[in-house]
Image 1 (cartoon, rainbow, N blue to C red):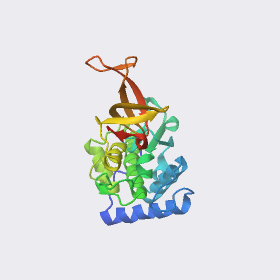
Image 2: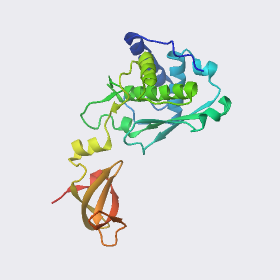
Image 3: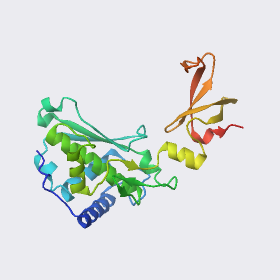
Image 4: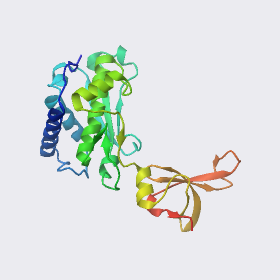
Length: 249
């Protein structure tokens, strides 16, 4: 068990400790050298983990945790900025064999200043990509603590909310960070359902903007297409960079 249940910080203490973590990370990381983030490695998340353990958690992971914690980055996380992965059979795994993974979506931090919009995580305004990274990491760290102590974790439940508020001052379990959809709408003027045009192999195509992730998914009518709608129309699917799209002429 991690003995963190009695740790309750005041708002000034949380702000000071978060700043300490940021300063130490900038000092130690070969990638993060200021509030903007242009490069990020899994090793930076490991550094963060150690700093939070020391500065916020009184080294509880160092003292009590017998398992392993892995860290990874993903460009595929486009709706949620972080994810904690834990075996479903955690209750049957020996503590020393447990592996929990924290995975963060890089695009939220690399494109933090891409558009002018609200930027907050867990109910706290994020003034920089680094602060957003910390707030997302704090949320995932609460998941890890719950998994280690209780074999389950749910950020919609009171136990998680109390833990996140006591340790980090979080008031919600959601974030408002620039998503690909927000960037597409504000920067390029595109939204789901728009009719768009693009060129592929010197040929012009027209289709419906179906999804926006790192690239846009465009459905183009094609009698030989492998996708069909309820009316029986068939479509071919194309993945197109947003910069290559044009609105319907």
